[in-house]
Amino acid sequence: MPEPAFAAVGDNCIDQFLPPVGDCLVGGNAVNVAVQLARLGRRVAYFGAVGEDAAGRAVEAALRRNAVDVAGLRRVGAHATARTDIETLPDGDRRFVFESFGAAVHYRADGADIARLATMAYVHLGWIRGAVALRRALRHSAAVLSQDLSVNNAAEDLDPSGLDVAFSSASPGAGEAESWRLLAAGAAVAVVTLGAAGSLANDGVEIRRMAALPTPVSDTTGAGDAFIAGFLDAHAKGLNLQQCLASGAERGALACRYRGGFPQAPLQPFVHDRGS
Image 1: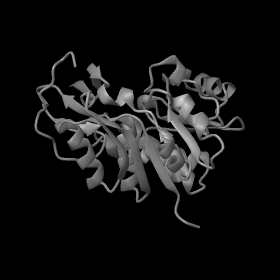
Image 2: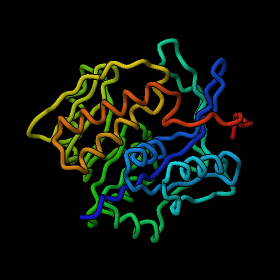
Image 3: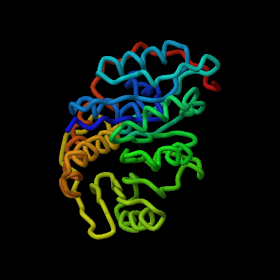
Image 4: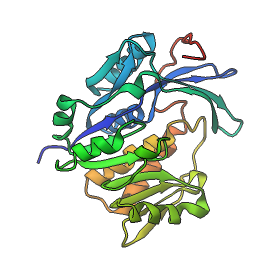
């Protein structure tokens, strides 16, 4: 059988790490998941929107360098590429000081996108407007549908019904309840990351848990996205929930060792208007 083909749909951005760090890096949930899957040897396509600006060109270049198919990348001239300003805390965790979703807000899959997505074995949604409508359009395809509900912030995009794998996050004490909530709302499998406490997966029959792996922490940005890629890679191999969690934990731990959502050289600082 041919190797499964993956698609990641939704957000991209420039992560601007505030001084004293000062790095600018390509990121965004869907981009990070796409690149991490490609680094695992998967054939991956990215679908989303950037501005016709230097930041957008940097996003495209990063995807191409990592062998991600960019035929689904759309350029929106009227809007700047998304960006996030990040403050790095002493323990390596981060605080999002400012976010502008820019061109990413305006991405909607058209008929050609949907036709191509329907041929994929796996379709993962990151931060995206119109998530439920896109999933509905793909409902009759054979694609395994996953979505990171923890990065979306509009109520209409948070419905887990119909998801084969729903990713979320919660505090350690609330993880199991969150998994049951997602299953009750229609997800087939619920995967909940718990920060330093690890993760759990619930398919309605069993709940499996995985401790976070000890690792030097440079930056936690994108660690959850790397976890998703590791989990989906193992899922595509037909591994069980415990093995999928272990694969996710391994990729997430590796991502904590470098700054940003995947290994890359820092970009030159981009000049943005705070209000754009």
